[in-house]
Amino acid sequence: MKVAIVGGTGSFGRALARKLRSLDHEVYVGSRDAQRGRERAIELGVQGGANEEVVRGADLVVLATKSNATLDTARELVDAIGETPVLCVASDLAFSDIGVLPGREERSLAEEVSEIVRGPVASGLQSLSAAHLAAPELPDEDALICGDDPRAKELALDLASRLVGGRAVDVGPLANSRALEAMTAVILNVNREFGVTAGLRLTGLP
Ligand SMILES: NC(=O)c1ccc[n+]([C@@H]2O[C@H](COP(=O)([O-])OP(=O)(O)OC[C@H]3O[C@@H](n4cnc5c(N)ncnc54)[C@H](OP(=O)(O)O)[C@@H]3O)[C@@H](O)[C@H]2O)c1
Image (tube, rainbow, N blue to C red):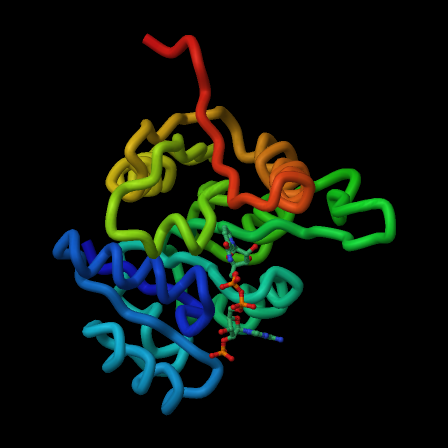
């Protein structure tokens, strides 16, 4: 599968690119700066370039820019992404004196992305930290994926299943990205409280 990682120069994108390369996927990392994309790609042993170049011809586009740039980036890449399925990994968060909070109360970033791009959108991997993704062994956690389109969700689940030691779990329609994105705030508070990098594991599955 050819996977293009928009914002693939960041900590999550680089960790994902390395992992996917080791799984023999064809990986492209994108950047706003084509030169930076190419340089990071060489370090990672993958292909790279400008975001709008790398998404063309991909089987799956992972939107992994800094979260607050997700919507603008999706708007800029509408034509380049075309009908290609998109996986949104972003969480909108608010950092306050009392802790980390969900950054939005109603619609998720992923739902908004799905109204911008023409391809189908799945959402997930919010609870999988870049640090866990970068570790040599698969992390002991599950990867949660939601979406309304079966094809996009299947691609995202297939990808996610190779990134964790647990399971890739279909958690329903795209609107459930509200919970996945808000869960990042929960995890970050746990990380702060216990000085850890936490992940998620569902119990009771067959
Ligand atoms: N870090 C994690 O542990 C983790 C875990 C799960 C999900 N995520 C999600 O993954 C996404 C990336 O996280 P990250 O930690 O890798 O972020 P990051 O390192 O802060 O940023 C990723 C990339 O976004 C691009 N970028 C920065 N500002 C931008 C702007 N204004 N417009 C367009 N692109 C911009 C940069 O690439 P260029 O400058 O090269 O364009 C940067 O390398 C986020 O949505 C995050 O919520 C992260």
